[in-house]
Every structure is written in C-alpha cells, then in structure tokens.
Amino acid sequence: MRDIGCIATLAIIADEQRSGTDAALRFPSVMQRGRTYAGLVGTLIVEQSGQPREVIALAIRQSAQDQRAMLAAKAAATRGNDGSMAQTNMAGLNDLAAPCFMQLDAIVPDDEPAD
Image 1 (cartoon, rainbow, N blue to C red):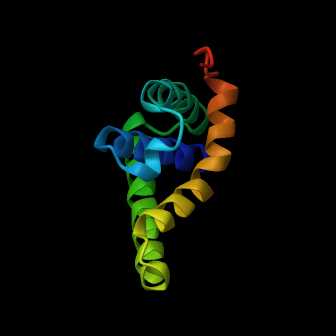
Image 2: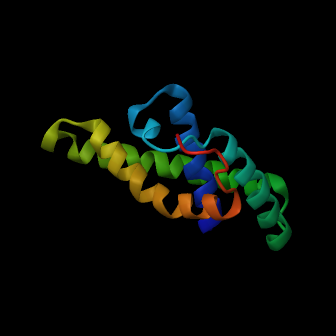
C-alpha cells in the first residue's frame, strides 16, 4: 500500500508541476523520474500481488483521489487561520512526499549534476 500511495503522490506532484503550482514547483522535478518509478514499482506490485495491472492502476487512481481530497480538506480547514491555501497545500504535500522521495531516490536516483 505504501508503494501505491507513493506512486499516487508523485503523480500528483508531477501533475501540479506541469500546471505550475508553486507548492509543487518547490520539489525537484518528478515528471520523468516519477514515470520511471511508477513503471518499475507498478510492475513489481503486479508481480508480487498477482493482481492484474488494471486492478493496481485503479488502486493508484483511488489513492491519488483520496490524497487530493485530504489535501483539499486540510487546506479548507486551515485557510481561515492564515489565509494561505498555498502554504497549507505545501505542508500537506511535504507530509506525503517526504517518504516517497526517499523511495524515489533509492529506486530511480537523480543523475542530474547539481548547478
């Protein structure tokens, strides 16, 4: 389940990065590495679980929907406190992303040289 959740989290971040969302742009780009991670880990989940690829894909989509709903609820609950929905979304994304970036780095290392 952790791996399914991380695939969903990285997909959300990649989607938000494509959209130019400030909260997501603070993370390293995950568009290419996230796609590679999803392919490798998704295949492993299919092999280990014995479930068809379609079932795993459905579980990933459901996890992404659940995570987006949780982020929206967290933003709505705290928006009145400081008026900053972006900060709330950033905190929520940080909470979701931290363990997933460790997994991503372990499975698909970032080979780009630092500037």
